[in-house]
Image (cartoon, rainbow, N blue to C red; front, side, top):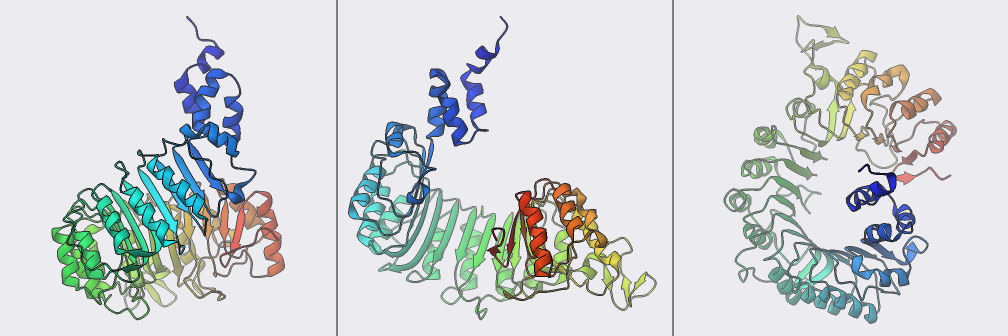
Amino acid sequence: MALNARTLWDIPELRIHLAQFLDDAQLAVASAVCKSWNTTFIPILYSQIIWNESSIGRKPSKKAVQTHATHIRTLDILGFVREFPFGDSTNIEDLYLGYGSIDHRIWDQLLKLIYNNPGLRSVNIDLLTDQYIYHREIMEALCHCKNLRTLSITLETLDVDMAEYLFNACSRLEDLTLDILKFTGMESMDKWTEFPNIRILSLMVEDGLSSRQQLQIIRKCPQLRSLFWHFSFKDVTCKEVCEAFSTCCLDLRELSLSSPDSSDLVGIQDKHLSQVICSCRELSKFVISDMQFGPLSFQSLRPHFKSLRNLVLDRNPLLSGSMAQEIMTSCPLLDALSIVSLKAKDVLGVVQGESGVINIEGLTLHHPHPQDWICLNLTSLTVYICGLESKPSEWQRSVLKQLARLEKLELLDIGPDVPWGEMVQDGLDLRLASGLDILVTLKRLETIMFLRLRQQMEEQDVKWMIQAWPRLRNIHGKLHYNSSRNKWLKAILRKKHISTIEDDVYEDDE
């Protein structure tokens, strides 16, 4: 029997597939078509609720939430709330709590919500308030969530009682984030022998839990694959860290490190980073900033080039241009890269003091055909390309040809890392007259950033971007150093719904 159009749309699986392409307003319209469509689309419409007093006009009504409470699977509660219509919700799986100061009646309802949803799998608590008694009760309630797998906690203070509830729950967790300003009363981690299921761990503790104690937590995670750690070598040795990584965290693949000592670089020397990197078997992600990543660390990172997918080396003054160029030509799997800077001469293979090869402006071309970048899977690239000022135009065009190879780029940031208010002239010139059209291959580009890099675009340059990059939605940087000219160009972009940001401040609503 042939299917007519009505019979076709009566297939529930097809309607469910259609729903993923509809926004809330469209889902509401679809749910009103008929009874069978209502049965399909109402559970999807109410599966995710964002509840915020400032969302009036966009959020569903209190009555609607109460009527469809059992359909809620994801609930985000943001800021101060006066109404809490979730008493009948019993099927919530993902919960985000971001509160300011609230009264005790809401806390009581919130606690009941946690106890009434035993299927909770992910909880994100961002409670920078002074209502510590309620924090303790929430931690106790979370201990009863037997299906809890992901927990993220941001608190001002975590006392020893709350910590005990927390670490008792860690036996079930797979993903734990602790962003705590101060631990109090925590003397030992010996009570807990192992956190056997934790694969993703983020530790950001400012005070009260030493780096050595935090290392104890890391040691207790034999399945650990991803670690973000804000730590200091002041109260733990590099040897202890390396021993823990090499013997207790054999599956560690993603490592992100930061330190409170970044201002004076105490204990974050190149040799320490080198040893830490060597203690990891195979890294797919490595993220650091404000550290002395130098020749030793670079040498230790080389064996990981073939497996790296995400590499961030921000604000590392010892990272040379030749190192950056080697990364670009040696890491085939990279999809995200952020490095301080890359000199044009390193891209071109230009060195001083050689003969028998092409001479350009007193320098010589080391490789007449420079090695191509091979990280063709990059979707995000942050690199300030410098050393172009007063150089032949072919230098910039050669650099742009390398960028044009990265056809999967969605975000490109070529701005310098300089203090707010400064403007740098040495960098890529984004004009058609300087070869901008070479980047026509970047059809997926959504965001281009050149904050604090002096530009002098004209109307034809901006219109070319709009036409050549159909997905472009955000431009960060001043289009022209002349304010009136810049304003005119922004107006052209605004008509195409492309936002502009200058010095980290939105400027598209003048």
